[in-house]
Image: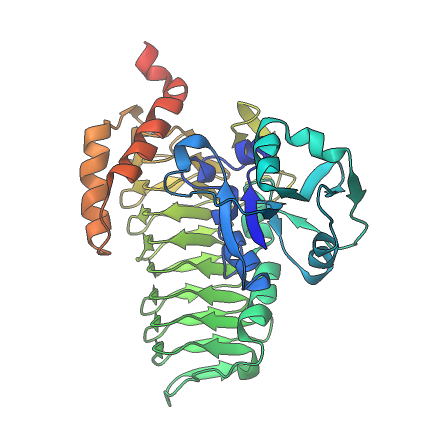
Length: 403
């Protein structure tokens, strides 16, 4: 079976700025990205993406004679999987007026691209009770604890942990701690009483670190000495973290290596949080947090009391940066200076509370090249084309350019 994970346009817009640089299914929720979850459920299938044209060179789609198209925002579970597998050729599955999945031929993919709504005609309603669709950015962190638990079961079932071979590390509920080969843990505290802890391949937990589950540390990442990792948090691959992190998702290849608080937040790839930077995740009056929404072009009520920072790929902040409750920073923003920056920081912004100018594209490339070289990855022409497209696409938000 050929599996294609499609971007529903209105959902993709709700998930900006994170989906400026990736398909929806490439978002990390839990231990795995949504695409990696589907690959685990369809181990013999090729998994590809149907996404925006400017992303297709990096995330190509593969057509097969028989194709299963699945909404890229859907996190799989056995119940919805059973309903999807039961679909016949030309049949679709919907839930709450949302197209979940459809099965079609190679020519049917072109028809789907032109008019996906037409695939509702021969549809069945999904009547299962459990259904997780990541259609708002804050669901990435609010659903993260549950997805860590689901992914933990998926990844560790019938497998044996490499274990913890350090006499000075203290564990609680060790049966719910899984350590991949090559990982090292020294003089740390791991408490899995409230949820599982997953330590990925070649990851490092350094001396004096405290980790509380549910928690995931992905391949090659580090928890620095003395760090406090609170529950429902995921540190994506090849990242370094320190200070205090709570109910947050770091997609990968990003650093928050020093003291400071990050809570109820999502960071993209290639981000860096300066030393002693903090975000607020709770308003002083305990009111619901409003968050910038690209689809609306304004702020919407999340219905959450706790909501912190959403930061797109390649964005950075200087030391001692303060982020207000419910701040959205776009792609390749460079944020610094005293005071609280505005709660919506457009892509390719340079500055902070004192004012913003444009972070020029040539300078963006220079920084990205240096940052990515540190992880032995090149900034190739495909990546540059994506960054250039996002630069042009987001120009309307940089209102100072018009004055």
